Length: 434
Image (tube, rainbow, N blue to C red):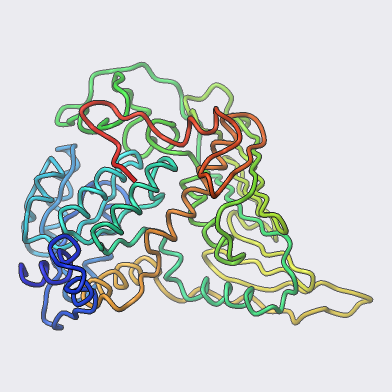
């Protein structure tokens, strides 16, 4: 596989501009195998691994994690799934050094996405990186720059972009049948999220390289609340529900409205469901994004599952002059506006989802690795826009007021908001340059 890797993935780093064009159109033979390494194998990294194994011509060869307990368990499961023992690494840089690996899956906490993806692009690897793309606006911009600099293939894990029913719903919005859409709403009501009780700091579990887990995040004692799944609720590592669920659902709202970044954002929320819990990010939040001639609204709430439009616990609504289209992971439908008892557009009864978006998302990446003329369903530029918009919602919340965004100057009108655009990395880690 070394020749394939060099031809399709390293062209941007090694070739002249003329040869780069040839590399971009190169197509691998059907017999070629794409060899994959996985960084972070506990949660979505493992789900992504299994989705990749469903794709013909893919061989997962290496598992990497900072937790030996997770590695041991996943290595056993992997051998059961494939009949082969995986290679094991504990430092992602050693995985990237392996010239036989063509593509990497990054399934780590959000604060690691930027460094790992940039290093993977620099190493000539294709990348599947979990959402949200980055944990800050500056990180998203640096990741896009690295992809473009190295001519890399980077798919981001917003897999709803690969579901046919989402595509059909968005096509309906774009058809004009709803009339002018002045407002879109996206929401996630999460009854399964319980309170996170405050716990004391403690030594890291045996077998965990906690310093590596922290990576560029600030040094602090280990706390079980911040580890594994619950990292999502702490600003050092993630952006709470606004970026965790928000990038999936706001992504569809932005796609339907053909929107980039808003002119202004305001947000309110807090620990309304679980006062005194250990979470830093709000368990209840509303954000309003003004795009000039339309708005997009986000809201989430934990401990509550009865959402709008007949109790949907998540979804996106496009509210047009002639009707409203409502879509979630299970179905889409259109509710007509009525005028003088006459429907202004046709009603569309619920159309059910009928495919596996995650599996199709993995297959799409492999297709694009083998044939650079094909288009990614969620390339890094697309995912960066969505992640940046969600970061804006959090920045408005954290600064406590309305913020204006100047897209040309790449800055807010509030100094405190601008300060939250760029993270401070802990030495020796350095934020990559955009």
